Amino acid sequence: MIPDKSPLARCVMVLGTTSGAGKSWLTTALCRYYARQGLKVAPYKAQNMSNNARVVAGGEIGSAQYFQALAARATPEVRMNPLLLKPEKDTQSQVVLMGQVSPELSRMEWRGRSLSVWPVVAQALDALRAENDVVVIEGAGSPAEINLKSCDIVNMRVALHANAACLLVTDIDRGGAFAHLYGTWAMLDDAEKKLIKGFVLNKFRGDASLLAPGPQMLQDLTGVPTVATLPMWWQHGLPEEDGVFDDRSTAAGMVTRTVAVIAYPRISNLDEFQPLKNVPGVRLKWVRSPSGLAGLDAADWVILPGSKATSADLAWLRAQGLDQAIAAHAHRGGAVLGICGGLQMLGEALIDPHGIDGNGPGLGLLPVVTLFDETKTVQHRQARFEPVRGVWRALSGVDVQGYEIHHGQTAPHTAMAAAGDIAYPVMRDGLAWQNAAGNVLGLYVHGMFEDPRVLQALFGAATPTLESVFDGLADYVEQHFEPGMLASLIDAREKVPVVGSKSSQSNAD
Image (tube, rainbow, N blue to C red; front, top):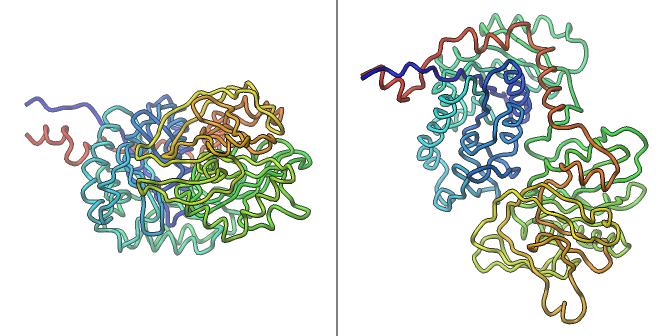
């Protein structure tokens, strides 16, 4: 047999000492950095746990990998995030394998699930390596979670499989950074330690010279150099991967409009609100109690975002008393916007004959009813606003490019419509509805605030483009990493075939 001598992509992997250390944004920055060197680059994360997802060919992937692909100047695809876990409860997640929901895997015990999907996620990585020059891999959580090591399919098992040059990043703003780095390194096996090529101190504030002699002492203990100290950067412009991100306004000028996003426990697709942080005069804040909608800091707009567990989040919202606060805001004529799960909450009722999400009464601010379907709608969507009334009238005739991810199908409440309480369709195909007063609007299309046409219509303003954000990230790491370090991660490594790949099998024959 003739050996397959085609080289596989070299892999750079970003690991973290903890969740939130900075893996996602650093991976994104490296994707753009290597793409600017004229290389063909792809991102990869074997398993992501997030309710922030994007539609790609073949289904859905985590939003972080979607943005990383754009930064790499690649087309986002399911192989870049072959396994996506979307939490529905503290002990339950919807499992998405290669872009598609898998009910069987969703029901499976997680340790057995990890072992069963490893061949699939490994094959996805192998395929990306065969088609690219560089694959930038993101880990998850910490590689030193020894209780999970036997079922690891996202950290060091991936690193060894790809012979990846690994960077270990820590959040120094939390304190204990040197202990985190040393402890993580110390808990790795010898073969795994050899893959760690550099430590990265992220979110540093102050005089970097005060870190001495810490980095040198750490290198003496581990043999691993500290290759970058990254200053705290609040305004990089990239959406956060998980959790509610910092809500301090980055826009210029006096605040003229406060936008409150209800931050329920299973909030999803929150990354679509990132552009609002950069609109002049707009303050974006996250609200978990009625006090956030009242007083001197009262909201002008209230947004009910997407949810991975609409009925449960609606129950939580009621328990906080937010249902009454939102209703009072709407009855005063205040602007209310519901997106996807938020649209469903605004209606009269949630009807779930298949046990997907749960039954229950809605907030009663839109005369519509949502019926949950077994089939999940996952697709890109180009839509146009029909004539819109009231506070949202600036959207009339505006084209929107976005995406849909939902089980629910929403339609007018027939009895209420017969009595004259009409839900006005403002997009075709049941995508958007408005109340008679014109201040409550609900739609299924995610991503409207990422569309410059919408921002121009609503605010008369534009925000930085994603391209400028990606280039800014690449400039940042190029400035703060040790000279030549990023190039050495791919240039100074031997191209080693993937363990178990066709290439290695051919050579063995």
